[in-house]
Image (cartoon, rainbow, N blue to C red):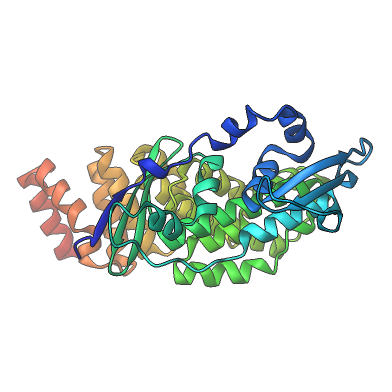
Length: 372
């Protein structure tokens, strides 16, 4: 479907807004050190103006934050002043930012910059640069608007609804990150079932929202005596969660992070029932990233551990052919067909093998088929 409207976002980008505001605030660095730089930015986005802090150095979460809510310069009375412990103040900010708001109608004209801002969402325009996103272009299509952007220098594209959900996931992760020292309570295994449902729907952003804070505490927990003593069932459930999260990260363009999560999943899976799935996901990710040689090991491991042959052998055939190991690639296609893979799944590899090895291989292939 042709685009109904393509709008450059250069004129409404907010890159560096937080740093520029900080240049005019004398206590900027101190507030960032105490509240946290991103939480201070969240306060600005939500209109919560911090008026004073009573710092508790023994327990920073008990630091008292006095603030008022409203635009800069607005008159406020003593009744408008609020006070919360820092931990609760952060929760209040995050709660306000992750509340989903309806998407405003798409702009009708390229010059309607206010309409573009409202459509993308002002809070999302301000959140984006905090996490390394530089918005480039908005494409309005009949099935929904799409945002093209750079994330840490890499070009990506998202439906507007997915982009907004991604920003909310980052905000939620920020709160989970600062509360991690409190405990492993952040690892709620009940979330795995919901993450599996999200995976079935293809909702990778939701998986990130549910499980995105898990890897760091799980990496630490694995090195503790309690982590080493986990039963096979619990380790398998955690590995399953890490597999879902790793794949979601990769689909969303964070390939390095996704592979790191999958490697942690390998450690939790061990040789248990989830190991084949984790190795398959890791090998498939490497292959899709153009690293065929690296993918061969994990894919072979997945096959040896019982991964579905109709899925793993075609990928192994591709990887082996890419490394010019044509006889091994041909053997992998035979394994794939024996496991139930379709002819189309291995057709490209077979075509490459026939072309490279020539007529002699064609005769060998015919003899092999007759014996079968």
